Length: 438
Picture 1: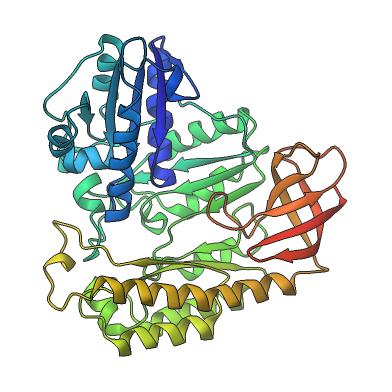
Picture 2 (picture 1 turned 90 degrees about the vertical axis):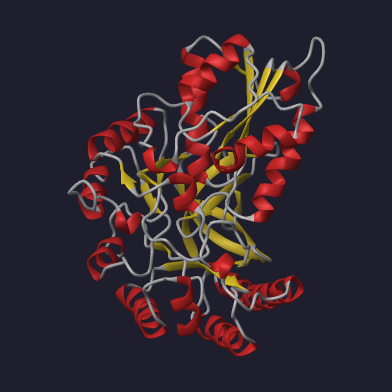
C-alpha cells in the first residue's frame, strides 16, 4: 500500500509523524512524496489554536478531493486535532474515512492495510497516554538536522493553553531511549540535534533525571556538532543551565524562552508563575553570561482583561530589550481552558492590531541587528545546495524553519558542513555571506 503523510503543526508533531511513517514502512507499506501517488493519505493535524485548527480542516478537505476510482482510497486524520475533536471531524467531513488520536500507531497501521473506514474516533484519553518510546523512526536524509523529542505533555497548566487537555501530563522519556535515538540520528548523518518538548527545563522531574545530565551525555556523541534546546520555560531556566549553555559546549547559547507577556497582571492571569522583575533579571543574566547569546521569545496579545496600559507596558518592554528573535500570537480562546471562561475578552480586531504593532517594532530591531553583522564572521551550517551552486545555511543563532537564513557563496559546499562565513549583505530578515574557510 502506498501512503502519503501531510505534516502540520510544530516540530513535536513532525516527530510523531516520523514514528508513524516508520511503523507503516515496517509493515511493508511504501511512503510516496505526493498525495496523487498514494492509496492512503494521512493528515497529521494540529489542534493547538484556532488558526491551526482551521488549517488542518482546510487540508483535510483539500486532500479528500484526491479520492476516487483508481486514486486515493482512504483519507485519515491523525494527531492533535483528532485527539481533541475526532468525532466532530468525522461528522463534519463525510469524505473522511477515520480519525485517530495521539499514539494510535497500531490502529492506524491496521486501517491503512485494510482500507478500513470508521464512524468514531479511535483514541486513548489524554490522562492515560503513555509516551511513544523510540523503537525506530523515519529520517529525512535531506537535512543536516533532526528534531528529537525528550518528553510529551505538560504540567504547567497555563490558563490559555490546551496542550494538557490534548497530550496529558508531562512525561519524560528515559535518558537511554533518547540517547539511542540520538545515536541513530547521528549515524544517519545528522549534525544538529534540536531537543523539543513542551518545556525542556522540566525534563526528568518525573523520572529522577535532569536536563543537564541528559545534555552532558548527548555531548559525547562525537559526530554531533550542535545541540539546540527549544521551549525553555522562564520559571524553570536556572543559572546553572545558563552557564552550561554559554561556555562553549555543543549545547548552543540559543535561548528559546517563551515569555508570553510582561505585565504582572497578565502573567498572573496566564498562570505563568513568573513576574516582570524575574523576567528582566533572567534576560540580564543570560546576556551577562556571554556576549555570544541569542534570545528568542514569543508573546501573546489580547488575553481577556488585557488593557491598553497592559499592552503598552509590553510594547515598551520589547523595544527596550531588543530581542534577537521574536514571534507574536493573537490570543485564541480554546474550549476547556481557564482563559476561555474569563470576562472582558478583547475584540478580535484589537488583538490583531496589537500583534501588528509588536511585529512592526520587532522588524526594525531585527533589521538593525542584521545590518550590524555586515563584515563580521560567523559559523554557518549548510542546509541545502541550490541549482547555481550557492547554498542556504544558518548561523548557530538560527533555528531551522523558524528563524532567518543566510545565502552562502562558496565552492563545492556540502550539506551538513560548518563553514566560517563573512556576512556581506543584509536582506531584511535574511543575510548573504561568503565562505572564508572550512
